Length: 294
Image (cartoon, rainbow, N blue to C red):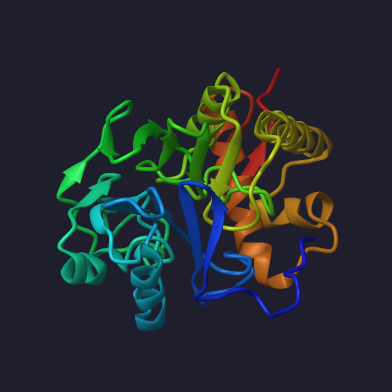
């Protein structure tokens, strides 16, 4: 189990993480967000313009900290990797202050009859421009290119900073924890394909929305793919012993798990089961999952 480090954390402070990048931590720590959501300001420190990536929650103090990190530069774009409520709600109030367009992922609207709660999504998100894979934004001395990485959510994007070899990975890859994949919008097959997509790249460093910079990104991604394959094998082995419901997997697969994270673990197992079902490796009868008859 990952432990959140002790305070103090640098909430509200602009930290220089590389020559073109400043980071501002939002005051929203939790078992799902680690020490909080990290907003990035990209641009030359004394240049005329910049972009803001993942503005975070609509917290007044955090928005003021972002504006301080912008340091008088013109904001050319407010860019969101996806629309969970710890990532995009500050986009609209920040746009109102700066006049910048909201650019990046598509809005995501889930039907009310789907078997998941919509509460994690930002229903106020209204982009001025949706970026497709390979499209981007350019400013003075910086270029950000969108990379479609569905899986954690269907609308998830990463952004590559072409000048430095950095990749802003949102929640797709994080150093402190694996990403939660929640069906039906989250898709384990898409998530694995997106990891393979990153593994084929040569990015120098990852800056995620939660946790420290990832200095050996391909090594981490390779390990994440292996971890998910191990989870698949665990599920198949346990079903080889006997059919079980989703909750029945948790004690064997997540020993010592913080009780607050059990719902996330159940969602992750469900995502694996749905993917395995699509591939014909498992089947279900009501709430019970089992191996197909041979």
